[in-house]
Length: 97
Image (cartoon, rainbow, N blue to C red; front, side):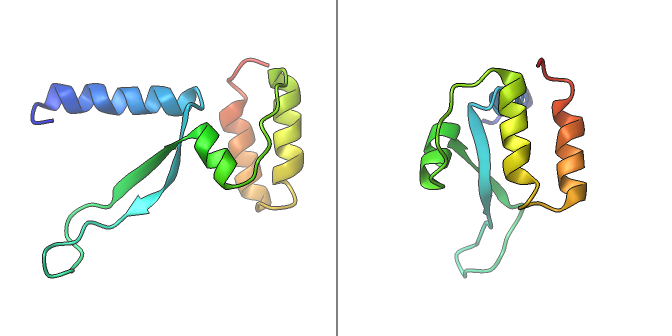
């Protein structure tokens, strides 16, 4: 992608896929030069959500959105710091229930 418009379209497509939970950010990768030294910006690694869930042994459930949110936060609360849970609750508040 040499043209800025192509990069912008690509970035918007990634955001759309993340917002619909079709893909997740699965990590970052450091760019290295020929000598093995860190060079430039880190790259973001994406995975299809289904593949990520399978890799983490997360069961795929067919739930209405409100039940999915309840199930998600019941799973997250004992694992995440309270501040992170509150942040995600605010982020998901705008999605339809």
